[in-house]
Length: 197
Image (cartoon, rainbow, N blue to C red; front, side):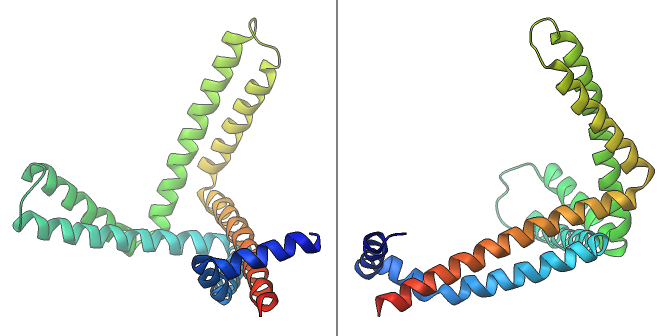
C-alpha cells in the first residue's frame, strides 16, 4: 500500500462516523479472533468432543423450540393447524430430550445419514458419468468423485466415530481460518485508529 492510498483510507475513516465507530471497536474483532482460534485449536486436537458438544447444544435448542411450540399451542393465534403444531412440538421435544441425554448417539446417527447420502450420491455420479461419456470429455473425473464419495460413505458407515472426528477437524479448520481473518481485520482497524490520531 503506497502512502497516498493509506492517506485516503485514513481520510475515509475520519470522514465517516460509521467507519470511525467500526475502527474504534477493533479490539472486539481481536477478541472474537482469539476465541475462534482457541476453539479451532481445541477442535483440531479433540474433534469428536467438539462435534458431540455442538450436537448437545443442538439438542438444547430443539428442546427450547419444543417448549415454545407447546406454549404456542395453548396461547395465541395459530397460523397453522393445531395438529401440525402439536406434531412439531412433540418432534422437537423428543429430538431435544434424546440429544441432550445421549449426544454421541445423535451425532452417530447424523454421521450414518451422511454416509448414506455419500453412497447414494456417489452411485448417482457414476451413473451420470456413464450416461454423458459420449457428450463430454473428462467424465472420468465425475466417476472418480463418485467412487471417492462411496468410499468415504462406507468408511463413515463402518466407523461413525471416525466420521465425527473428520467433521470436528473441518469445524476446527473453519474456526481457525475465521479467527485469523478476525485478528488480521482487528489489527488493521487498530492501525487505522492509531494513524488517524
